[in-house]
Length: 156
Ligand code: SF4
Ligand code: SF4
Image (tube, rainbow, N blue to C red; front, side, top):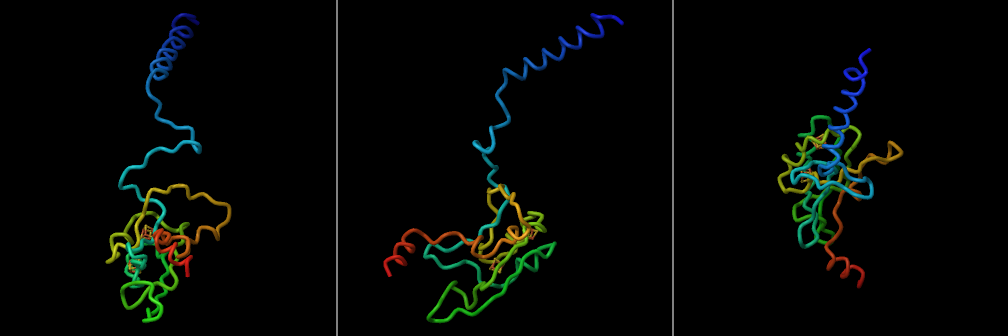
C-alpha cells in the first residue's frame, strides 16, 4: 500500500473540498427556528379567501371538486338568504373539506375556481399526529375576517 497515494492524497483532497464549502454561504437554515423564504408561486396549504367586505368568495359551485384529479375535495352548498348571507352569490359552501393526505398539491382546484376563492399558499408545515387532523375543514381553511369586521361583531 502506498501511504501517500492511497491515504494522504484522498484525505487532502477531501479537506480541500470541505474548506472550500466551509467558506461559502450556507444553503441550509436552522429549522424550525428559521424558515427559508418560499418561491412566490409555491403551492402548499390551501386557503379559502374572503372579499374585503368579509363575505366568502366561495359560492359552493363545486368546480374545484370536479377538477381535482384525486377527488379529495368535498363541497356541500346551501342557499344564502336575505337574513343570513355568507357570499355574494345565490349559494355558499355550507361544508368545504379537503383531504390533505390524498391531495397532490397540483393546484387544479385553484385554476378551476371562478371566484378565486381557493388558493394554495406558502404554508408547508403540514405534519401532524393523527389522520383525522389532515381533513382540512372550512373553518380551518377560511381566512379570518378583516379586523374591522371582527371589531364590529364584538361590539354587537
Ligand atoms: S391541489 Fe390538486 S389534488 Fe389538491 S385539492 Fe387541489 S386539485 Fe385536488
Ligand atoms: S372554491 Fe371556488 S370552485 Fe370550489 S366551490 Fe368554492 S367557488 Fe366553486
